[in-house]
Image (cartoon, rainbow, N blue to C red):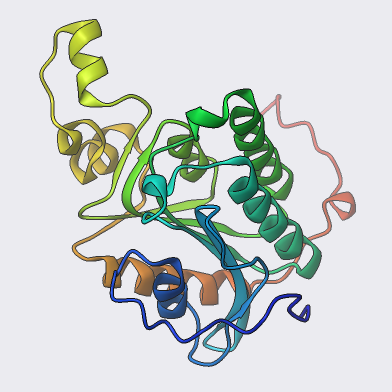
Length: 233
């Protein structure tokens, strides 16, 4: 396990339950968390720790900062978290609560979000990727969870690219955020979500169980499997 390049996390004395350190502390075993990104105003906090003894990398949106919008610096933290997970061959868990890209940063933030998607794609098939959506995951943040292996949606989670106002202006359909991107449409129609929970606490507990299960799996070298043509079956 890599040693932290940042100071140990301060005790999560924040009272706002959306604080990333509070959320990451709920994911990891007590006393095992160490940060792999600084505690800053980037909108993302990344850490490494253990879940029932299994090494896991995690990152969390900071919904207190511009609604968790993804800027270039926050995206760098996510990409770094993926680099660590791939190098250490451990599961990675993303706790999402984000309004999407920081449009005020212009093309720079859009490019940074693209780098996050590229990191997720590179990690596919190498390490287990789990997403936990605890609030809105809108715009660019909607694509992130959809690129991962397993998606857990809290009752208050919402996944959509464009909001109800845009849908109404383009199509004339009146719909709220729950009907557009909540548990009902995603668990029964879109297939994007695999697990729906009633609370954020339950969502994180499910992520812990899945991280332990997948973290104990054996590893397969892709180059050790012979290519077979099944087209004749």
